[in-house]
Length: 509
Image (cartoon, rainbow, N blue to C red; front, side):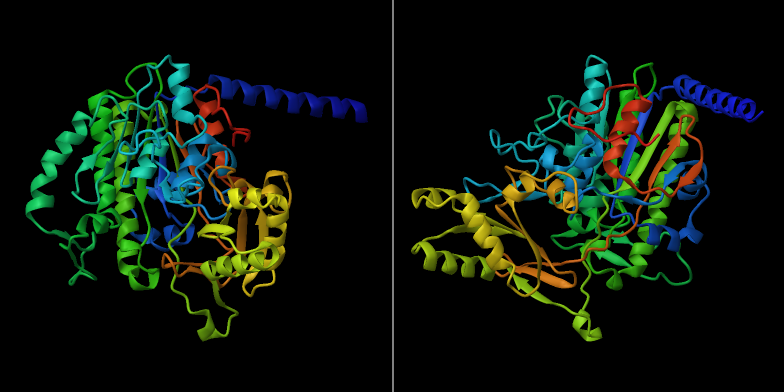
């Protein structure tokens, strides 16, 4: 009897599995994928301002979408560039090469932008992205027929999300307020972007830009007149920018007739949910609230328009965050919390003195950038000192300094795989990262007096979701921890193409 019940149970499970597989196979391939990355979106702010949302923006996404609530990046210190690159490639900076918005060129010792093409420095491009992305694979699988565009307030997010084979990438110029592109895209600035520029020329050039709350009571909580020589940079980080992104996205879909045939198209959008002009949150709480309210309205307009135009079963939306937030100006000493400042330029000078005492005078540390030191390989080679020996001595020397939690050498990270420091390794790239990586203790400032850079070290990162919505995606909330490198293979599986060529992560569903 027991075996009889066991057989029935196994058959039931097998039947459910076959049925689930059949449902997945029969799920319609979307005609349009809208991959949305919201810069600095945070779950706590998303929830705090929920009472002010409409029914068809965040509320619809959170109630009718598949929501992964416990999300992180599989590497340390993400920013706009490294985050968007991981989302579209399904891998980490260790493979895709975008360790941040810029890094030090080891030959020239100058900062290099993540969208700088060393062969054509005046033409921004995705040349530094070392692997394929979801858009590239879609182009390949459709023999170049899929339409792929990216729109963002920022150059790096537009170009990197578009990938190598896209039809176009558009972003706002912080100098002119115009929506521009790169000569890398052979078709030039799209007609829909030119039309939008012409439509908004009067408002942005002849008049000052005014920002006040979307929901106005008796007296506005704030009012900003953007009129300085930085007004367009301020506009890029205001709540006003998101309406532009949606308007341009809908114009792009209409003009390019995206999602109207049997070939899946891809639209990559970047919205902004960070503090106004990168100020501390404590200084712009009312502006941040308005940014989320306006963002909700923009998503409502986008989703409603695309569902009405193409049908809910024809569009797949994927929404997530860049997973970081602008640093706060927290004074830990005021509350007797351990803190201090680690000066990386001073550490480099002391290391030079130490090496000089060992091996004779010389500039053994070429330069420092962010939390990294770049050693002088040529000098070490001329003195017949192994890089491994110099790196190990540097590691031991810096570990004795106040405010240092850990020190990693490039060789150590290259030779390690999974384990305790996998996130550190994933953020490293052999060509773009330094020889010594310094992990500053939480609550301490990492400061470079030569460049005036100052960063507060914090291990905790803001919580944020991944949301899939549309094309038969079941509603639900998932608490299992997931990472953002699983987005690209999930989209690839949903549209039945190969995942990007360096992607090893599993699809989320």
